[in-house]
Length: 169
Image (cartoon, rainbow, N blue to C red; front, side, top):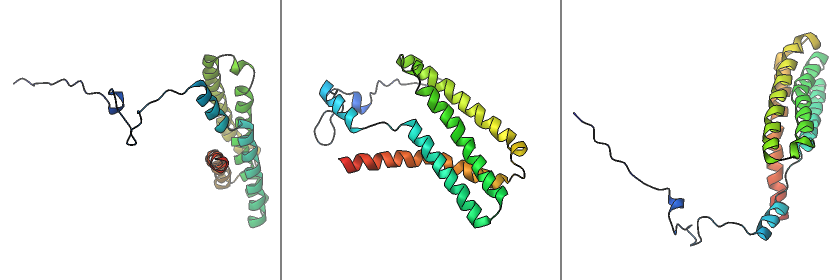
C-alpha cells in the first residue's frame, strides 16, 4: 500500500508576477528616498521615557485614588509598589536602549534590546520576590492591580500615537 504524494509549487498571491491589489496597483512598490523620508516624518516613534513617565503618573494617581477610596495605607502602598515594579525596570531599560552603545549598529541595537529586556524581567521578578519584606503589610491584590494597570499604559501609548497621527493627517 503506497501513499502517493503530490508536490505542488504554489506561490503566494503576492509573489506572482503582476499580482495587483483590488484598486489595480501593484501589490508591492518600493518607496523612493523622498517617500521614505516623508513616511518617517509622518510616523514619529514614541519615546520610551514618555511611556515610563505616563506609567509613573498613572501609578501615582492610582495609589492616590486607592488611598481616597479605601483609606488604608497598606492598600495605597501596595498599589504604589506594584506600579514601581513596572516603572523602575522600565526606566532601567529605557536608559539602556537609549544609550550611545545601542545606536552603534542595527545588530548592537538588537542585542542591547534583548539584554535590557532580560535585565528588566529580572529586576521585576526580584522586586516581586522582595515585596513581602519591603511593604508591610502587603496587599497582593492591590499590588497586582497597580502592576497590571501600569502595564496597560503601553497600549494607551500606542493608541495615543495612532490618535495623534490621525489628527495631524
